[in-house]
Image (cartoon, rainbow, N blue to C red; front, side, top):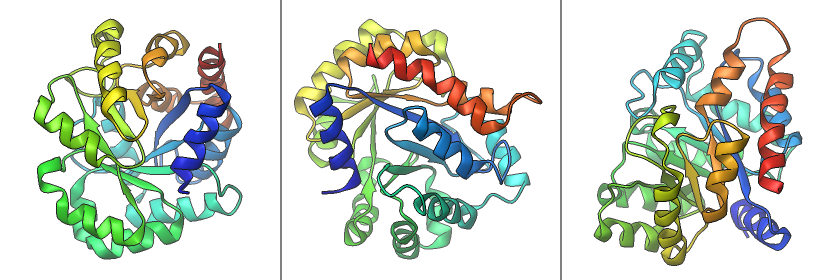
Length: 266
């Protein structure tokens, strides 16, 4: 079984929802990434999405855009990201890790080389925001050869035909973007409308369905959880980690995530 299959089977058996935090690798510092990842797991994270810094993150709002800019300025390229996962795996071999980013760094690195090195480092899946599913066949074939899951995205504007294709080909989990827009626009989250779409997706998908975009705190996580297999929290966590001064980043990460874990447990 893959780490995804093991983790979601454990969650299902326990009657729990997956909590999937997103952080940008290299922010708030190069040294903080791995300690923050471990802190998130201790605070209740089931899967970690690790953002690969990119110069033009078109699907992301200003919070994650700025975090990507800061990380790149520190030198957090793809090699750094893979090394961070490798160090994380020295102490944690069970938590699934998904690299979330854009196609350009993968293609520059070389898709075959990237897949090989990502799996060797301990990466379980990759979510490429700007890779349309209709054009993903070649990338998926390369990933499949190395045992790397290509995580798919669905949204409120996804056509029925594309949804059927996504549900049939999804790997790891299916990421449902809860509204049409960029990350961080929590005022656009309509939990009722998203819940109806999530019910449809879960009935058709061969893998678990997690909901992201607009989830910023315990209340929004709890509101989205009933109709999803898990929830993703990103911009609000990235913003909390970027606050100057105060606690160490790993302590801030744990303090931010603990109420969400409690809310999902309830």
